Amino acid sequence: MPTFWDEIARPLAEGTLMTLLVFIGGIVIATVLGIGVAALRLSKFSVLRGIAWVHVEFFRGVSVLVLIFWVFFVFPLLGITMSPLTTAWVVIGLNQSAFIAEIVRAGIQAVPRGQIEASIAINLSAWDRFRNIVFPQALPIALPPYANQLVNTLKETAVVSLIGLADLTFRGNELRTHLGHSMEIFVSIGIVYLLLAYLLTQGTSWLERKMRVEPKRGTTPKQAIRLRNFFIGGGIK
Amino acid sequence: MSWDWAYSISIIPALLDGLWVTLIVTFIATSFGLVGGLGLGILGSMANPVLSRIAGAYVVIFRNTPFLVQLYLIYFALPEFGIVLSSEVSGVLGLGLFISAYMAEVFRAGIASVPSGQWEACTAINMSKFHTWMRVVLPQAIPPIIPMLGNYANLAFKLSAYVAVIGTIELFGTALRLGEKSYRYLEPFTLVGLMYLAVSVAVTVSLRQLEKRMQRTRPEMTTL
Image 1 (tube, chains in turn cyan, orange):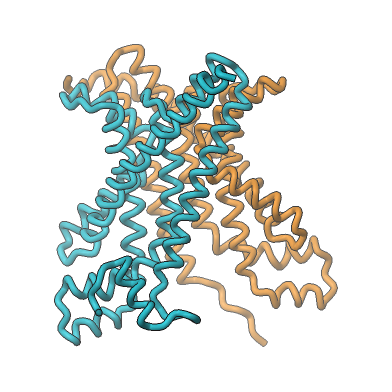
Image 2: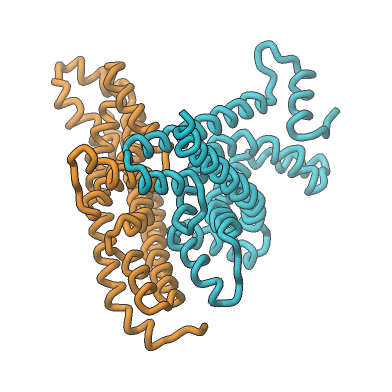
């Protein structure tokens, strides 16, 4: 059935690729920015903490739909023109960075105070303290809520269809206007989103299992260190 | 393009009307979400594997697909089966169904946090299932999760902007209409963004206060 492939399957496959493209760009920006904002929130200087607080409250408080329309319609009037894809990346990145910053902050703050005091006592530099003591312990704490946020980001990418970016939702809506059969089309799209979300959840829980550094049954301390070095780079050999 | 104060002031009444519609949409959808979420939460914590699976599947499906797709499904696909709903009803229904999936998880966690001794005690004094739920389990399960439920009400408020996409004239829909009419997008979108931000931040801050107060005045257990 050539019509099925050309008229239905191909647009949906292209839409899925666009959804993934928007998702990956958005999540990379959000993660990098989120870690930066979390670092500012834990800073010694109240001004930096204040800036980070405003960032988090602003981007958590404003609806992403309103934000994307604002950037898409108002920025050109101010002389800043961005392609729809760039707009999508920037908006999703900024919006999600606020949530990721809070996840990272909570993870870092959950590391027991004694760990930091101990590493100060053995005279580790601030960088070593973060890299070898705080970060490896914060990561497994932050990973489950981060996985949750990945799924939220994936769902949020549907908003880009409203500024004309041909993602999965956009393609589905297009098919609906051409062919009708809304039920079949939107259920199929829903299944694709469900599958993508499932893959994301499975991927992160696999990472989580790999990242457990404490020696478990069947894992020798040596293996544990090797695993740890594989994922976060060597420090203690 | 510079900011036009006269124009901004002239559109404020229309935007406030829109805000009112948004608040009504949020209120109805949240009430729907609370009732649905409680029902699903109770189903999900039942021993009956069929019922708890059904509740679990509902939660997984509604939490892992975009709200926009769900909204399209209700608004565009249901009429094919003879169920024609207006854009307002579709929007409220869609938002309520979506939020109830989130609230179900909260209710389920709240119910799971009630110590099993409470259940056993009810069985021991021969309380009926209904009374166990109404007088023992829910009164202990619900108060601690109120701030969490509030967060999801806030999420419903922010997501309610999506119902403009299927044609409801609420706050965001009003801004879209104004923009199309006057070709000025700067003022309507900025004002609308600020309105969403103001309500949402106010709710977040007061929920945080509520949470703090609740932690301070947690009722002590009565002991003999």
